[in-house]
Length: 411
Image (cartoon, rainbow, N blue to C red; front, side, top):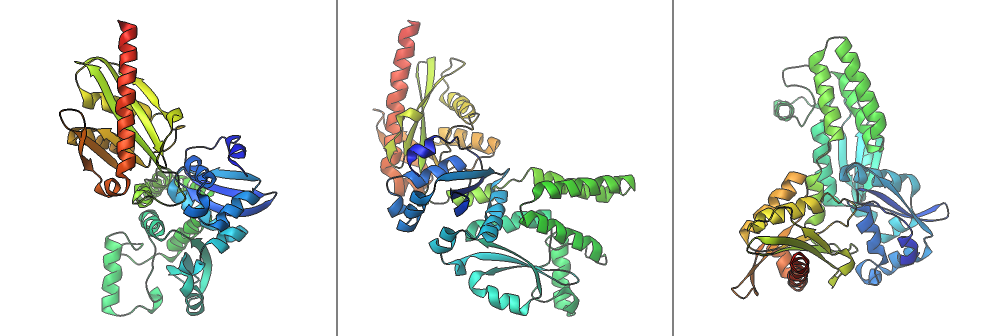
C-alpha cells in the first residue's frame, strides 16, 4: 500500500482495531486510541527507522486496511488480543518476542481464578493450573495492567495463589475477607460465597475477553429484568450499575499510559493556540499544527470569538470547546498554549470537563513577546522544545495575520 491508497479510505478518529490485509490474509493486527492517527503513522517516510524493516515490508505487501471501531480504548485492547489469538497474523508474531506478552488464564475450579502471566511463564502456569480459558497475547504491559484494574472494578474476581477450596489458614482467610471488603474479590466478608453467582461472573468475564460486549450487555439486561420481576431490587440495582459501567467505560488511565512519552511509529501531532485582539475588540483565535516536527498548514484553523472582551482565558476556553467538538479532526498528542499558568489552567479545565487526557505546555513571553520560559509538562519541553516553539511561533504569526485581515474587513 501507498499513502495514495490510504487517502482513499475515510478512517475514524476513534478507538478500535485495524488490520492490514493482502486479499483475505490478515498480515498484522493492532489497536489504536485514534484509528486515523495510528494507521497514518505507518505511511511516513521514516517507517523503517521508527518501527522496523519488517513492518515496512508488511505495509508494502498489504492491499487494504480494515478497521473495527470500539466504544473505548479498553475494548480495543481486549479485541486486539482476541483477534491476534484467533488469526495468528504472521507479522504480529515476527515483530516482537511474545515471551514478554501478557496472558489471562481462567481456571477450571469450583471457584475459578483469573490469573495473569507472561508468555515466558505460560507453559509452566498451564502445567500447574487446571486452565479452562486462555486469553491473549496482550502486547502492551502498562496498558494491560491498567485494563485489568478497570475490568476488576466491574467484575471482581479471585486471583489467589492457591484454589479457594484449599485456603484454610487464618491469615489467608483474613486477606480474602479484606479484599472482599474493598471490592477486589467477589462476595461480602460476612456471607457464604455463592458458587452459582460467581460462575455467572466468570461467564461474563469470558464474553468480555472475547470482545462480545453486545452479547454481554444483552445478558445483563435480561438478568436485571428477571431480578426486578422477582422484586430482588438490590441485586437488580447491582446489575444496573454493571451495565452503566460497561456502557460508560472511563479508560482515562489507558490513554494516560499512551500519552506518557512520545512513541515510535505514531504520528506526533502538536496543536498550538493563540489569541489576537485590539484592546478586547475583534477577538480572534487560531490553531496551528506541527506533525513530526514539520508544520501542517492544511490543518490550521481560525476562530472568530463570539464575544468581544479583553479576556484571553475566556477566548481560549471558547476555542478549545469548539475545537474538540470536531472529532473528525486529528487527535493531538500535545497542546501548546500562549501564556502562563492562567492559560494552562484554563486549557486543563476544558480537557478535564471533556474527558481528554492530553499533556499541555504553556510558552511564557517577555515584554517584547519573545519566548522566555515554559510552564506545564517539563518532560515534553526537554524532548520537543524546538517543535513546541515552532508551533507557538506559527500560532502567534497566524493569529496576528488573521486578526489584521478581519479588522481590515470590519474597518
